[in-house]
Length: 332
Image 1 (spheres, rainbow, N blue to C red):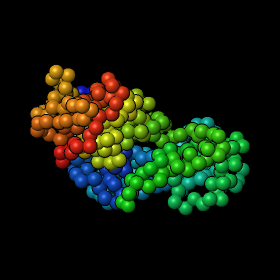
Image 2: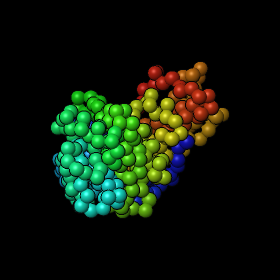
Image 3: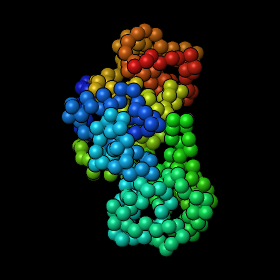
Image 4: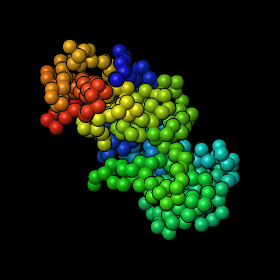
């Protein structure tokens, strides 16, 4: 169930590992309030690392985009799945190794930074690395699939099947990974969330003894934190909505939940039990005939916490996901 912190999270942890899409921005726009919340978190002394499974853009470009949105960020604050993938390959192959590149400029830059030699998928190589690239062509995908099937070591930057854009949820690199894997019968080594290399690379680069993962996706951000043994904060500004939250199984449940990044500046109390029903800050949640009902009044953060507690308790006890079709979350 949910964890508890009697101090603001920015005081209880010294590093926030922030996912980007759906947490700090969506498409080309900042999540409302995010720049101000992050400035306050920095002022409180917490380090910020901006981490992303998107391997297409370089850390410098990501930092530039964040600054355009009003978020203070340097290149060294950004860690990508491309960097984590390059580290995996460098550790296995050593410097100077030829790596076939199926992806974009961000992945190429990361390979070069680790002393590896990017080549095309048609050249001799000791491994192949794949990542999202808007200009990847089908003939290169076919060549890569054959070489992976024939035994070439394969590292994938991530397996995200979707990512949010300004025109809606779009296919992610995970769709290509599934295609290559289906053809070749090979599962890649994965650098991005929910696997732990990206989180380990973030701590190595940015520092921090008490890291907290902050994300909007249960299957990557939150599951990845659990795999790495880190606590996590789920913010409700991205792809996870109320139906996904109440259906979360134990391996995808966050330590904390908040409407947005203001949750980093707040304590995180755990609901009390009132005859088995969670109660917190004026809210009470209970399941009636399979439907989740929330009564009372209070802060939006407390509303989300009683909802998660009631829904997960019901799911664990009965195996059934509660009906939340009538519920509407209060605005932050």
